[in-house]
Length: 445
Image (cartoon, rainbow, N blue to C red; front, side, top):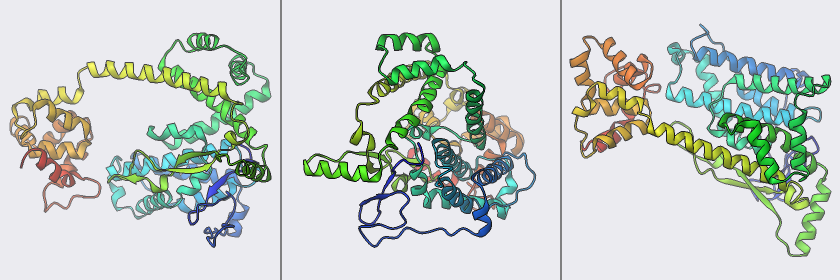
């Protein structure tokens, strides 16, 4: 991606295509909200904004992990707006910085999910106004800034959605970029053979058999190495494709579209995820499939076959990775499930679960999160039995159940407390009570 890349966005009012940097639609009265920076914000460099955000996320994560005794607030929403503006400046609008914005999106999503699930160790956070304000800021970003994030999206980012992210990913991303620059300056030839291999693929000057032999030799067909090779190729390939797209100006695009219209040919579009219209579950997690947004496909418009061999190689790696993942999943399914083993030791098979068979009861527990599991086990009478048979104190009970479910003891205590209607436990953090209707229905109560 380069600064000259003619990005197009769709007007939310009339669906017309307009340049990404436009603040108003030329086809209808719609005007995009404009952000006015203060003098101090204007003077900030792109790196200063990135450093401030990295430090802020790092402090937030350390506080949530219980490694920081206190937390002071930070205006995340404002700084993300500043970052969007700074990144669009000529000197900063490049592939690395656009990828960086995508990394922030996933960090924000992960923090939101962790807070909603109560997946953090600092219990005082629930009463920390600065922490709650930061969470509110991140929620606003996730809900209101989707279009901004999507305007910087690169095609190789979509597969990142299921990965759990941390602010340390950004540090690693920056370090990788700096290391790459350093190697280029020092003339390090360590990565040259792989780069030459990638260039042969791009130029279609290597056969499919040669490609497969090279992949087998390089990766030993190990899943982790195949994924690394796919990542390396994406880093090599997508900037070159985007550089090719950047050769065409808005005037070139308009002329090409008019030519297609005159010849009554179809204008090529591609679909990208429209996270703004995505459906979310009770925890705020996006439910698939995600609705899509149509944008102009510059590649198909001007050079549809230039990178044909690159896409062949990407498909080859994807098929190899999928094959190895299925193999690993099959091997894991054969191995005994730890949850089933743990509950079996505590006498789980002795209980009745309404119309559910024992295997169905295990499946229900394995498919759901900890608050649901605790609600289910409590309604089935399992927890009460464990307390009588194996625990002489509440603390001992919490420890037994926490070991069985592989979760913190505080999580067990909190979720058991909220099942008591008069308990003053934090019902936003511990949510077992919300699952009672579903659990009772499953158990036939």
